Image 1 (cartoon, rainbow, N blue to C red):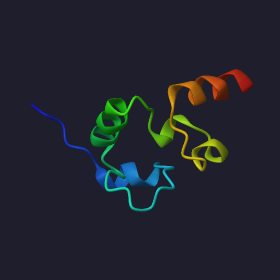
Image 2 (image 1 turned 90 degrees about the vertical axis):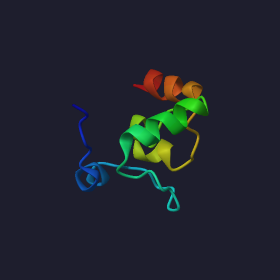
Image 3 (image 1 turned 135 degrees about the horizontal axis):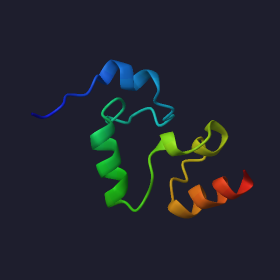
Image 4 (image 1 turned 120 degrees about the vertical axis):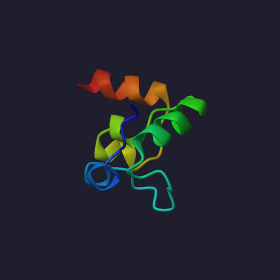
Length: 67
C-alpha cells in the first residue's frame, strides 16, 4: 500500500528559499527532480549554503568537510 506524504508537515521543515518552487512539501518529487539534475535538494545544506543555490554534490562534500 503506497504511503501518502503530509505535504503541510513537510513544508514546515523545508528550507528551500527558491520561491517559485512547485515541489515544496513534496519530498519525493523534489528528490527525483534534483537527482535527475545531478544535485541534492535544499534540505541537505545548511541555510547559509542553500541560499547560494549551489545544489551540486561537490558543494555538499565541501560543506561536510567544513564540519
